[in-house]
Amino acid sequence: MAQEAAGRLPEEILSLWKREQVLLKSRVVDWDTEAWQRHPAFAGLQRVGGVDVSFVKGDSVSACASLVVLSYPELEVVYEDCRMVSLTAPYVAGFLAFREVPFLLDAVRRLREREPHLMPQVLFVDGNGVLHHQGFGEACHLGVLADLPCIGVAKTLLQVAGLEKSAVHKEKIRLLRAGGDAFPLTGGSGAVLGVALKSHDHSTKPIYVSVGHRMSLEAAVRLTRCCCRFRIPEPVRQADIRSREYIRRILGGPGPPAPRQGRSSKVQRPKACPRGGPEEHTGEAPS
Image (cartoon, rainbow, N blue to C red; front, side, top):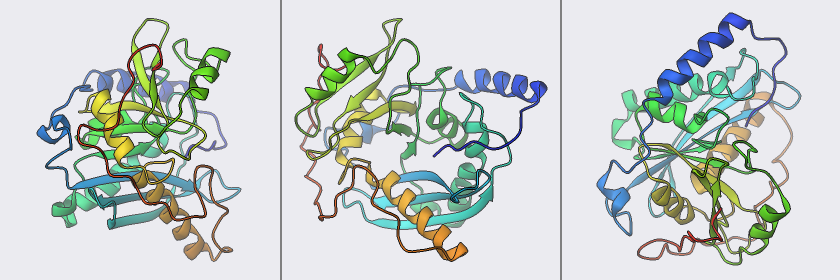
């Protein structure tokens, strides 16, 4: 999702970002706020959303911001919004949200104004939530400003707060056998910052799930598993596919890109999410 932009951020702007980040972080809710989140089969959940930002190849400024809404549990797209945007703010580690979230928030606002009956009840974000340098990643930032439950889903481990791709971490990944197997990501302070989840029986790498806003980690992990036809949750996967297709249509580029890691050329049907959700390991296995 992230890509660097040329230029250096003035110190006064960075200081402003730091202050705003601290203020917004104080508003994060890391527990379940909706009845459907506490139900074993997510009864009452009808719409799930996903957001993504895809860049024009070789361009760190021109990008497509996309929002999709899928029916649940069918996981069929019922709404999409793709817009070309210019990300002029430079990339600064730990502050990606200030570069991308304004455009994603615009997409949420357009949906809320034009078709409020299609508003998602939860948003999946291609990035981290509380698993972040300052404990306030893009999923938190978007969730707080949009006032929506949000889940952060990252493809790689962000090595912060004592988390690292150590031999122990790699061994825990090796022990993930079936879709739904997981282990907690425990920081140096002892706090659980997220979960490494084997999201699909055929995936070889886990995804990293963390709380964004207005949802517990346990519910976030269960729902993520239920939304995975492939390695990446379908809302994020569809947002990514459609934003890339939009860029090709607008710029007249070549055919579809090569499949991203975690996809298969074979059609895979999602397994029904078991009543009570997929098993979530919470002992030594979850890290």
